[in-house]
Amino acid sequence: MNDVSDRGFWEERWSQALRDHGDAITRRPPNAHLTGIAEDLVAGVALDAGCGHGSDTLWLATRGWRVTAVDFSATALDHGRSTADAIGTDVAERVEWVEGDLGTWAPEPGHYDLVLCLYVHVDGSVEAMVERMAAGVATGGSLLLVGHRPIDPETGAATPAAGQVQVSVDEAVAALDPARWEFVVAEDRPRAAAGTGTDAVIHARRLS
Ligand SMILES: C[S@@+](CC[C@H](N)C(=O)[O-])C[C@H]1O[C@@H](n2cnc3c(N)ncnc32)[C@H](O)[C@@H]1O
Image (spheres, rainbow, N blue to C red):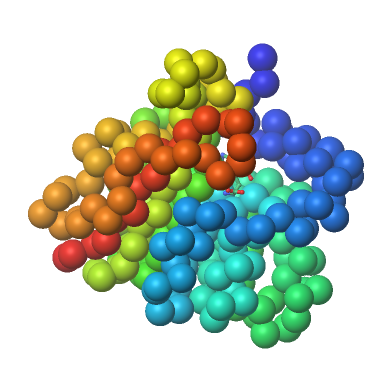
């Protein structure tokens, strides 16, 4: 069985995807949950944890954000870096591409105005992962977590994320102290990509 929490799996997956349809990947639009929340935010310092090919990082950077983009796939990071270079020096200079394993890599505490972690497969405890990402958010900043639900709640059918561990609303809410976090969004929402079920969407603002 493929192990989606394995670095080698992702290296292989990104290498093949970029070989087969690299241009289409470069043109991918940013995530709709992100654009929905970040449109209203003042550009600051962001962390894109599990950035993949970098479309969300680059959308933020073109809007003036300085972004730390972390992934354990060197191939995905290389693609993001060269896409940034092609967009222009001003955008490329706003992004730091970091090769790191989110199982152990921890953000600088309280540093980021926005931490996003979208569709990242968790190897271990979801609660620990949420706490690690949340620790990077500055007071007044936002945490955006999105997980692809393994079962479509509408139909009970398995989705392409079946068998994977990704963040859920219940686990994220349980991991965040309500005295320190305001939940702006904490619900399952239809996934923008048609036919692939439902996303758990958590947008929380740090109060203190
Ligand atoms: C489904 S992709 C999502 C990419 C991007 N966030 C998006 O929404 O398009 C999952 C990404 O997480 C990365 N990833 C998975 N586990 C990781 C880990 N433990 N540390 C760092 N990156 C990881 C993979 O390399 C892959 O790029």
